[in-house]
Amino acid sequence: MPTRFCDLVNIKLPIVLAPMGGATTPELVAAVSNAGGLGLAPLWRGDAKDVKDFVRRVKALTDAPFGVNLNMDFPSMEQLDACLEEGVPVISLFWGRAPDFIAHARSGGAKVIFTAWDSESAVEAVDHGAHAICAQGWEAGGHVRGTVSTMALVPTVVDAVGETPVIAAGGIADGRGLAAAMALGASAAWIGTRFLSAKETCIHPDYVARLIDACETDTGYYDDLFDGGWPNAPHRALQNSTTKAWEAAGRPKQGQRPGEGAIVASTPGRGELDRYACTTPNTGTTGDIEALSMWCGQGVSMVQKVQPAADIVHEIAHEARKIISF
Ligand SMILES: Cc1cc2nc3c(=O)[nH]c(=O)nc-3n(C[C@H](O)[C@H](O)[C@H](O)COP(=O)(O)O)c2cc1C
Image (cartoon, rainbow, N blue to C red; front, side):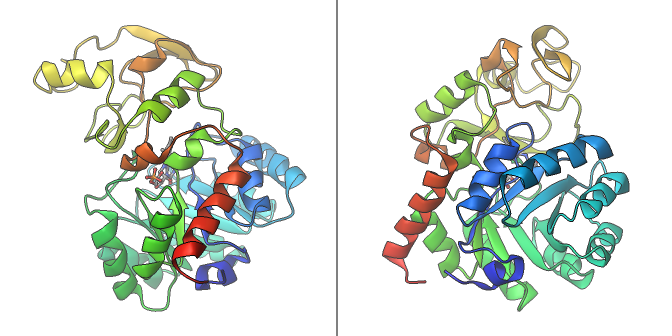
């Protein structure tokens, strides 16, 4: 399935494990890369040592290409330098314009993917030297900067950036989605929510169970709800007791929201959490898991069972091949 993006980053299948903060383990990244896709590790919360430790754990598990994702709302050259010193071949940048990070990653020999939310941000990143664009549609899970749906965004960005490979993100969870993305001109699919039920993730089992039970209408897009630790960053998550109480109260502003400030859970590394914390409940989180931010996209109805990440990659590729030849 050679596409321009596959050639660019030297992978066999046009399937990218979307970076998912708090959900991604070295085992998950390596499993997707070993299966022929590209695993991406979100390492923007750590210092240089944390970044290097995680990267070394991935490298111990795979010789295949993989990448690291950094958040431009919390820009850290120290994190980028740690990646470059470890020879990370692909750097993914999201949430914000990043000309200096693109240039620095390029000069360190990495291929750079920029997550765009509209055609203007995509073209600007390409002008600054990005090698590929991830076009993230509104359906996507987690933090979502734009408000355009994947179906409309991808062909628009493809037209805008010319020869630069575009990776489609948002609502793609099976081979039909991959085939559709490629029909829109994408060179690969960037898949998050579907991999949340991979055996190798570290999210809390209650969160996994809720994803498996959920349907396409069970998510919500919130401008600034689960904002503790990362304000002003719109996001999509499962509706739960927190979102429903907030809606019932008339969507009050920060400081006036139901139950604000009361501790409902605690999690390793962050300590106590109130219900509006920006967090990903993981296997070490204790307390009221249901009340926390359970990020996921509208493609959640296609999450139906726990399975190894490699099986997810192969299943998606196989299904897509039945629809389009590649
Ligand atoms: C649990 C979760 C955490 C996420 N964390 C990040 C992140 O740290 N960095 C990033 O660039 N995108 C993050 N995202 C967004 C994904 O990279 C991707 O754009 C999205 O999952 C694609 O849509 P889908 O969930 O419908 O497949 C996250 C998404 C989820 C579901």
